[in-house]
Each structure stands twice: as C-alpha cells, then as structure tokens.
Image 1 (tube, rainbow, N blue to C red):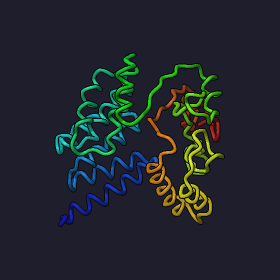
Image 2: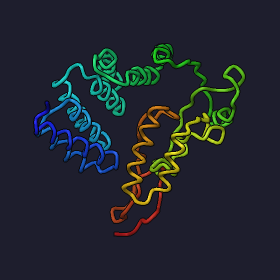
Image 3: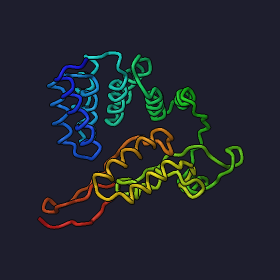
Image 4: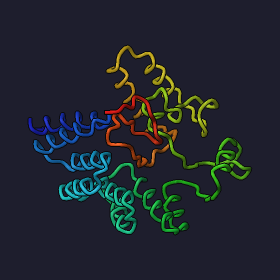
Length: 271
C-alpha cells in the first residue's frame, strides 16, 4: 500500500503533467519539484527533464535524466531522452551510447524510440546502411529516396503501391499554431480518403474531434483533447519526431510576440 506522501507525490505528478501538456512549463517545473520532494521517482525526474527541454534548458534536462537513472538504472526513458537532448545540441557522437543503453533497458515502453533516434544519428553521420538496419528492426520497410521538396509534394499525393510510384512515409513539419488544438490539427484526423496524406481511417478519433467542437466549455475541451491525444498514440496517424523553435530577432520594445514556426504579427505591440 502506498504511503500518504507517495499518494501526494503521485497527485503532484499528474498535475505537473497536465500543466506541461498545456504549455505551462514554469508551473510544471514547480509541481514536478514538489512531487520529487515528497517521494523521488525516476519518472518524475525524467518528466522534469522533459519540461526543461521544452524550455530550451538542455543541460538541466540532461542532469534530471541522470538523476532518474541513479534511482532506477533499468528505466529506459531517461537514457533515450539524454540521447535526444544531445542530438538537439548537435552532439551526435555523445548521444550514441545513451541510445544504445535505452535499447537494452529492461523497463522501457515504447521500445522503438531509441532505435529510431539512433537511426537519426547515423543518418546525420551519413551512415545510411546502419540507419536503415535500425529502422528495419522496428518494422519499417526502408527504401531511401532522396529528392527535392517539389518532388515530395508531387509524390505524396499518390495512393499507388510503392513499386508504382507510391510511398509509405515522408518527413515534413507542421507549425505550432496549426496543431495547437484538435480543430486545426489536420494531420491528427481519421477521415479516410478525405484525410491528409496517408489517408488514415479512425472513426473514434473523428468522433472525439466532433465532441471537442461541441464541448460546452474549456474544461470539457481539455478533457476531450487528452482522449484525442491518447487515441492518436494508439492508432498513430502520424509520428511527431520533435519540436523546433525558429530564431527570431526583434526590437526590445516589441511585446506579445507569438512563438511559431514562422513570424506572426497577431497582437504585436510596442511596449
């Protein structure tokens, strides 16, 4: 039976995760820290590191993951996360041993992440065959086709088999404004032939999206959005690989800049 402190720590952890998913990173850090003070767990340290990552604090994120490993060396997530953070810092060689440890960790789900991320490292290093081998180990049928973006845009419209000009996966980017809620996230759909490229069919996902539109208040929308996220992780209409922020320069007296994939000027004002 869990002690009262463990129960309180678990509650703080859930509140922290909710704040993190809502983009309230400072609040999430505060709540994860409270959870750890009550009862330290490898999960809480790992998720605290994940929050620091969203804040761009990569070294702090790595440090928290190392604390997670000290508590439970068999927990694979922090090994993988350290590898990802090192990739984000362009320290690819340093990432390799951490990702290799994640691959053999006894307690880790989903198992495919470190294989995929190590494949990313090998792609960057130009070791295409090694990357292909790792991708194949997680069930991907790999036939690398390097092409310009115009060719990608043309080919991705094809629903033919791969040996007749079709495709099975491509890499692109979606701006944060578009995917900030279920109403605009056109990739997180399941409306079959009317869906985005890939044309996934998922009646439950579509039903949840309709319910999100019909929800009477923000609290109800958030609850449905969480269900949509869980369903998306189950059926995987697309795979999010990471998050980037484009550097933007502006005068010090400009206020209310919207963080986005490209410059936006909504609500911008002089301070």
